Length: 314
Image 1 (cartoon, helix red, strand yellow):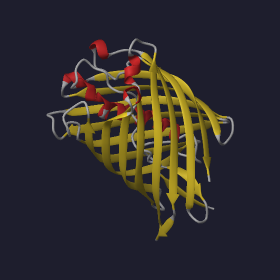
Image 2: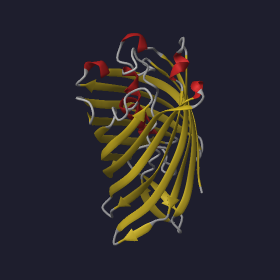
Image 3: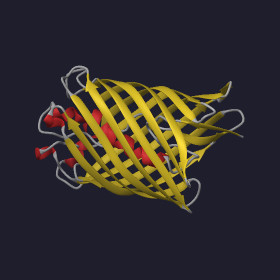
Image 4: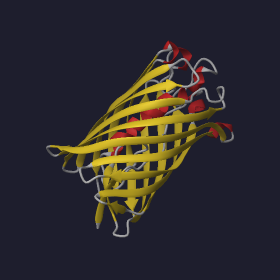
């Protein structure tokens, strides 16, 4: 059996629609909520080397069969509360509420190849997530479904450096409005990362560069198009059946069709308990923020909750 570290890029999953005071503010959904959920999912990926649930980010070691082909599937269910479920800056759009999130992720490993000390693996991922909101009048207006898919190429050197390139496609749908396709995003990404050990803990650091081509029913076409650079740090502490996984992610976004620059961040922690290699439960919390050159987009949000996860590989 050969071992290959690679990235499971399942596309960007957002935490919630941005509910705000005007039509124009409602497009917060793209850059901010994408980011906060990426970071939350990053903590999840650290905890199990057999299957990676991550949607964007750093590699995890995965054992591939001798033939280099494989299939990984995972289902997660989370229940959590947010003090700003709409990811709104202020005013009537800023409401607290509960979120019930269910996700099914699939990864196809399309071979493993060696080139003079460098390993290469092509991947294809597809995932579907459903976000249901509760706890406040009309908060179900925030409900949405997300489909994400895309090919990725993953390289790892014998020194432990990793390089990846991929194309991500994300489609949002409104379940309370006849499953209308409300948001579309196409994202080419390149990234470089390095994994290392700290005592018994495993840690990883990655820097990524991406461009987001967007289209939304709520704003002018291309208004959310942006260039984004991101830095992600994760660490995993195993303690018997428990795993503690803090994470930090920062990103800078420059908008092509707006006079706007954003600094976005997420800081969080997950505590997981592994009942078996395929079933686990977790508690998590995360703080997300955005500071923008346009004050109307400034943002703060805190989420806390728990969930269950099933996973398998073939």
